[in-house]
Image (cartoon, rainbow, N blue to C red; front, side):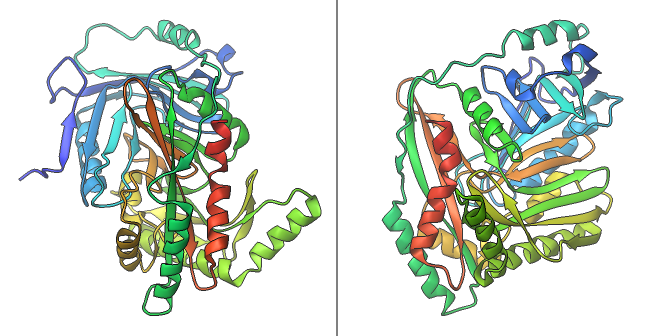
Amino acid sequence: MPNQNLRLVVDLSSSNSTPLSAKTRLLSPDTKIWQLINYLPAENPLAFVRGGSGIIGFGEALKLTAIGPDRMTELAKAWRQTVATAEVENTLVWPGSGLVAFGSVAFADDSTAESILIVPRLVLGSHDGEVWLTEIQAADADGEANIEAEWAKIFSNNSGKPHQFSANLHAGQISPDGFSNNVEAALEALTKGDLKKVVLARDVVADLPADFDIRNVLRQLSDSYPTCWIYNVDGTFGASPELLVRVSHGQVSARVLAGTAGRGTDPGIDNAIASALVGSAKNLAEHAFAVNSLVEALEPFCSHVDADPTPFSLALPNLWHLASDVHGVLKTGSSALDLAAALHPTAAVAGTPRNLALDFISRVEGIDRGRYAAPVGWISADGDGEWAIALRGGQLTDGEGQSQTLRAFAGCGVVAGSTASAELAETSLKFAPIRDALA
């Protein structure tokens, strides 16, 4: 019997069984001096961009959605079925060329938020100075794609409306006091049982005007956080510093972040903060939980896995993070989405042991996190892909009338030695990217 949690919606003129056709073309050399983030479409832009590389999507050729505990494995299965019948014309080896789907996943098994894969009508990509365009349509559609006409359309639609407002972010379902109380409850639980770490979060919300243009926010995040992955899928957007997993030609890589400190305004003080972070027993313990959980989850899928022996300090404009890179060699048969399903949620966003941490989060927070701290990224026809963790951003939903509502989360890992005041201050720092982008 088919899984009742899987819902398939195909936005094509033909039947649901109609296969897709994807054709990729390199664009002419004079298009190479540009910024990918500047060519987002006005309506429902899809994006996964870091620096000058990545992909953006236009329109919707196919949409797969799922809910429930098997949401990612069901989406991975549906994607394989889609690829099996697709006609793909692509001679490029760049990541994100050919047939691709953008995805965003719900954090919790019982979340009411949909997990989704979206295949765009057009994909614009850039890597190592090369620029390409992929058109995706029903395989039996009449006529050849006019690549030059599509390219002209993109260039004519690259402006966004300037900000004419400042968003008023205010407490959501978990107030600052409520978050502090949750941290205190976690500290008590850490002394009484097998729980070693739990990641708690709080939310802020804002009402946005009807003419709010997400493209401006994405561009500002890209400018301010060039080393982060700028993402936007079905209203889930942000600038993530954490790559959950990347699969490219059999190689697996990931970056773990756990342990945080604010940046100093003076260079000497800033360097001292970074050194203190690397030497902090509390932060090193939190980081080790995250690295070990990721390595253990990857091992069944890889013939070899290794991680940095010691973490390094990663500098973002407003934060220092403890970071470790993990590498592996993939066994055959698994896709980037399969690995994301096995890894999520890592100790970096849930805790250790995973089941105890998730149970604590569910009982104490008592809210639906939606897609916060869950995988967001893309997958290609050959199973390669990149999935970041949806951090430093928010979720847009339709509000009353023509308005939109923004909900954003920030969280911290609570371990022995944590304090409620320090964790609350850390959440304020982590709201900075979204707060500044909406100012």
